[in-house]
Structures are given as C-alpha cells and as structure tokens.
Length: 319
Image 1 (tube, rainbow, N blue to C red):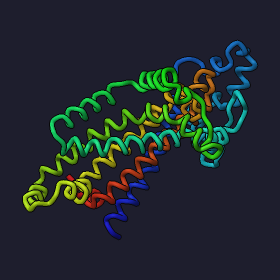
Image 2: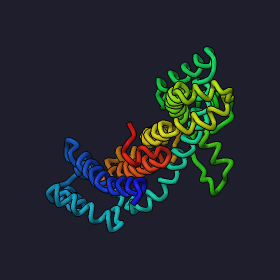
Image 3: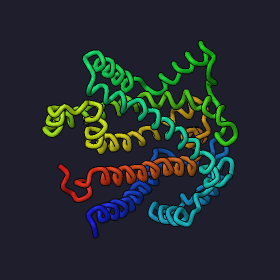
Image 4: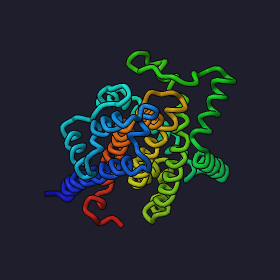
C-alpha cells in the first residue's frame, strides 16, 4: 500500500473519533448551561405538569449518559428530532437552511481567494508602495468586525447609492440575478476579512519560496518573474495557502451566524440565533452540530489536498 493511500485512510479514520468528540462537546455544552432549560423554554407556561411533560419528551429526566446514548442512537438512524416551537422535523429545517449557509460561505471564500491570492503575490513581488497598500488592506481586513463592516456597506450601497437591497433572500434556482443582488453585501462583509488572511499567508509563503536557493538559481538563469511565480513559487506555496483557506472556512461558518442575522438570510446561523431567543433547545443543538460537522469535513478535505500537493506530508517526512 502506497504512503499516500495510507495517509488518506489514516485521515479518514481519524475523522471518526473527532466527530464523536465533537458530538460529546455539543451535547454537554447545551446541557451544562446554568439554569433549568425546560423552565426557560416554557416561560410563563412552566406549570409543574408542563415541566414534567417537556422534560420527559426531551429525555431530560434521564441521566446524562443515557441521554447521550439515546440522542446519538437516534442521530445515527437519521432521526434528528423536532423543533419544539414549530414541531417541524429538524431534518427538514436543516435541509432548507444549510444550502443558504453553504452558498454564503462558498461565495465568500471564492471572492476572498480571488482577492487574497493575486494581492499576496503582488505584495511578495511588488515595490514599496504595493507592499504598503497590501499591508494596509491586511490591517483593515483583520481589524474590522464583520457586523460593523456589514452596517457600513448597507449605509453606502443601500442608503447612499441605492444599488443593493439591505436584507432578504431569493433562491438562486428561482431568480439567479436577484439571488446575487441579495448575496452581494453579505458576501462582501465576510470576504474582506478572509481575503486579508489569505493575502498575508500568500505573501509570506511566496516570499519564502522566492528566497530559496533553487529560485535564486532560476533568477540567475534569466527566467522571468512571471514564469517563476506561476511555474514554481505557487506550486511550492500551495500547501500553506490551502491550509489557511481550510481553517478560514471554519471562521466563515462562525461569522455566518452574525451576517445571516444582520442581512436576514434564512440560513442555519439565523436559525440558531432565533432558536436561542426562543430557548429552543433541540434546534440550537442540531444547528451547532451541523456547522461543527461541516467544518470537520472541510478540515478532512483540506488535509487530503495538502497531502496530495506535498507528498512529504503524506509520508510523514515534512518538517
């Protein structure tokens, strides 16, 4: 068996205990929150009979170990439970909401890559003013909170210029053009910060590669800088860039909670916020679980891509 195949199998098998540990953490975080979640969910309807009935329906009258076994067993059977407010199956709610969150995350990352990688290359190879401008962009992108940037974009593009809608959502399948108009501001809000991280990583990785002896030798032979970047530097810098992109997907999934609420997008992030306000215990748990599981899968794909790009990672010889 080749070292690459062993690496792929090892990483896939390692994902199983990670998913298990993540499910335990999500389960315990929800249940170890101070206070009685049942009385909080019921509010003014928290009579003794209602408390007992809801506690039994949610399985909270059992010990923690039995609760977890029942929950994970149902989860493995495909039973995600029901929303206690609308009584809709959580599998249907997530099927409706996840595509919106995935679209927001994917578009934001694509835009961040389209901005960050070219600017990172220019920062590594350009002159003094190019480096100063890109450094200013990095500081701006990393420092500005998403919610503040989103509000500023709404004030500019909706309030002042009246070019884009401030909130709402239309499915791409229904109206592609309207979908892109509604997604523009949320995507910009998330992409600018991620582009700054990708720019910084690309600049550092490309600069490091260009300083290596074999690149100095190619430069001495008269190879053009464009050819050195496209044919050699980017290939060697790719593992570092792919790694940071995979990590930032998790940041995007977390940022989607704020951005979806700010722009009224019907994604999983907004579903979680609404469920928290309603003290909707099962929906909060499954929403967090869905986002966490998505990030674990993305991390797996990232590791496999890095192993494919850099064989030293697959055979364990990378330093």
